[in-house]
Image (spheres, each protein chain N blue to C red):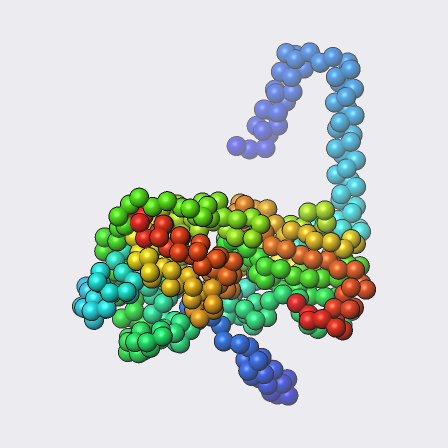
Length: 194
Length: 209
């Protein structure tokens, strides 16, 4: 179908709209308000994304999910909070999502410090979400998901899977303990790093 | 040149400090396709040796109707030493098999009619279908199937298996004697079960038909 026939079709639809449907004045006003609001938010989002570079967490890096346990980064003894922080002080955490849990099952991280999660899945699509924080992402087979966040409040948080992944999906959660900076320093000097 | 040397040294160092993985089996499309094309007739010839120990009368697990992927993984793990047989019999036997042999014998057992329990099983732990959220314990059925029939890729069939073998296996996972489960998934689950629960679960699955 060529563009001119599309245009004529749209025109005829608009004519029908004008002829057959009566719209109350008040309703029309609200339609304008809603349209303006939608337009306004699209512009705000556009400026945010294109000018201020505010984007959802995304990270393009591939990995072979089938042999994840044989890779150097996600080997079984390399998971969890890394003993050495990155040069800028960010703490890196390697996690594997597999039916039905995040491995390691429990991690301890500090508050008020950048935490970079690097996650991969061994099997199917999973989600990683820590309620009451902005840590949330999808973990797609064949890709490494990377999210950097700061936990402002110490406490115990669940790390949940929020993409339906199978019969045990509702059991798929692990524990994240966020310590205050003081507790973290004490743990690093006197305790054992998890 | 310097860069290449440095990278090689880094790689060597990295390999040296990496602990041995729990299994060298990876479910790549190549491996899965190869398993689908296993020669069951050749597997039948090989299974004559297996049947001497894997039968109804002794304590070893029965293999009829088991998932080919599971049998193949166990054989490879025995061969590589990732799974250790206390009697070393399986390690010795597996080391004599080629990759094709392991594929074929897995295909043969996968095609047999599955073993059946006597029926009348009752889950007294509540873990089979519900798990235990307080212990972060998923339900058995979420991975092993609603009827204990096993699930893709390599979660074994449990229904009808010998209770003593199931109990021994769960206890071995619990103590860490058996550790060829990738990312310790079964070890973590078994470590949270009491010995009594392990006995009850073994009894339940052995009775499933």
